[in-house]
Length: 218
Image (tube, rainbow, N blue to C red):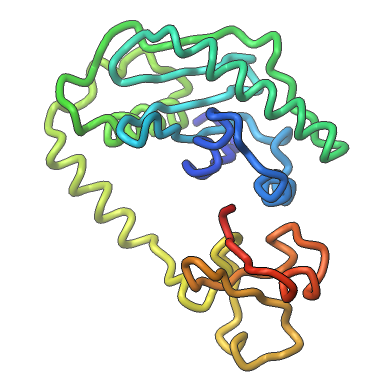
């Protein structure tokens, strides 16, 4: 097993790769100490149609750009995007610096996806192997039964899912009485109607969100 792993949610990782991550996202990630992790893992949704697994192995000093379609010239670009993000985060969040500038870059040595829709399943299976075994050397031996893999992933997601109806959409913490508790500082998104802790939004005060429309993922 590869030790402590920190996961960056796919929406945030995609923003990082597209170099549009906001200060709000930076604030959310500040709640986790990234430098204490052995692995930082996230899924990048390229063009809203293809998943690529992004992994920074802080212990072995390796950056993984793991595209199920195989080696890609995009690897250097995604490496630079993550490096720039960590550099800007270090200037914003003191005491939790992550520097990957001297990491080596690794990719899959062959194409393992032969269709147009199983990239997500393959990325999850590769991530599982990397986290459990610390290696991507055997990814070509992954099961070819994608249907069963999809069913297993779906069952796992359902088993571990959390009802966010009365939880903060950003951190997942909640209080079942929050709608009626005036002393708890919450704000409702004017776009999706979900609720967030004001402290999770990065907004300074209640007055700041009362004075304008609030969009949780803007």
